[in-house]
Image (cartoon, rainbow, N blue to C red):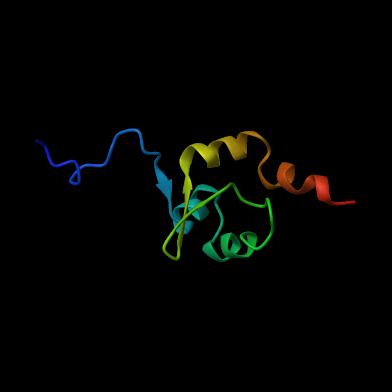
Length: 77
């Protein structure tokens, strides 16, 4: 029987760290940290221990739908 713990399943999404997310958004990690405090300012994340990760597909969909401008526009008058 093959040992499935050595290679991850192929159906898991690619996850980005906050540093990789910042680079993808052409921003800095501090900006990501600040935006995490604003509801809807970033795509949904997954927390593993104390670290947060963002699925590449979620980030791409979030950007395609207008990013933070779309997410936070409803609450501003």
